[in-house]
Length: 228
Length: 286
Image 1 (cartoon, each protein chain N blue to C red):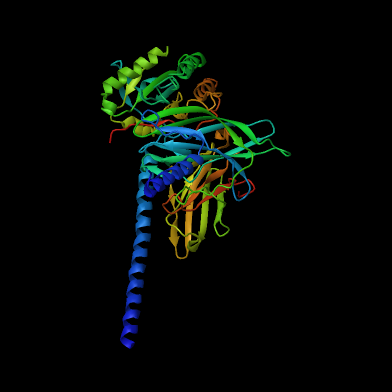
Image 2: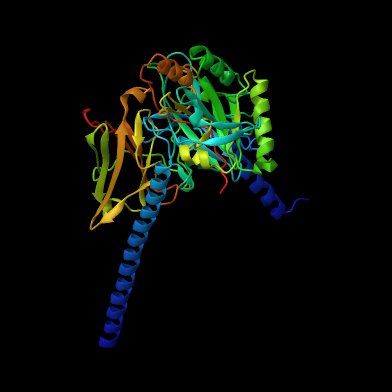
């Protein structure tokens, strides 16, 4: 009987020790997971454009074969719109930003508000996505804008470096750079109900020398299909 | 002559057909080119707290997903515009506990397989007709490696007598009020604030405990899209999450600090609502 009790006690003690070690392990793992997640978040934050800070410089080739340098537009307001031809919020279909006419109206209104403003589309879709080369994607994108009646340069960022430097997450995702080279607006092109055009408002405010309000809104749309 | 075994099979199949057919008002199955379909559930439901809901149900093809009210880094939440007869009041749309999808680089919150959106409704005072016409204009984005937009105008004639629905055991939970043992507060200044959540570890039956932020115009969580993991220190679980409030970006009205405290990994594990005023505004917890 005494031996049985001793064995039972030993089993309980050993089991408790095992459970305690497992719990400590779980806590340690939870801490490691959190640290890893924070590191990845910090990395992403570091790479993202911020309102009020200098916009990341870039040099990209357009679907038209020309070279586009952000630095060449110092002094101009620059609208950067992330785009993908197969995203139903961006370029695909009649309900998309470019398919429903909103984008063309916006581009026209931007030119009206500030004739010196530059409007560029950036396509960070990886080469080979849905069987299309980045050249195909560029050509399709340019055709979509042309069909909408407002041809806008489409810059090819197949390796995604510029998209990641800006922190572009969706198509569409808009970044507006003011004449000093600082980011003045980040977010959606317009409100969900379509009543407020954030791009036109920002360009108009910058032209008038007024603060951009809002300077940040929640973007929505398809995830940018970055290369790994 | 039909044998007893055959008869029993027929009776069983007939009973099965009745059970399956009674619960949902014409819930279509998704097809290859329609990865998500929507329908109005056949009855107004009454929750234990007495609140009544019209339920819009989505069926979702495998590997596709819909989105939570904060979709995360990408995506778009479904929208529902409900029309009811004069005198009825339509309240907020309540989303169930979301799944955590995607990766740390592209975090998404959403739903696979199915989604029931509850829309709060309040009948007028006085006698009600036996049933009312209900129209729901629904729009959504459903994604896999590609995304598709969907929309539908749904109609139904719903009995005005609500039913108390007992959800199946494996159905998703809806967020509930914060437990009294969980302390949540906002500290600091609008430009540099912290959401502090603290509770005895024993308050939570399931782990991990994570906070997923809602998307509120004018509020930016400075450490990304989440989820933010609570860490146990001794007997306490603690979370500290940095955020900033920019009133000029609050395009939808006065900003609130909102989100869910998710416990455990399962869709049936408890989730608690957090809804606080930012620093400088009197605190009201809902």
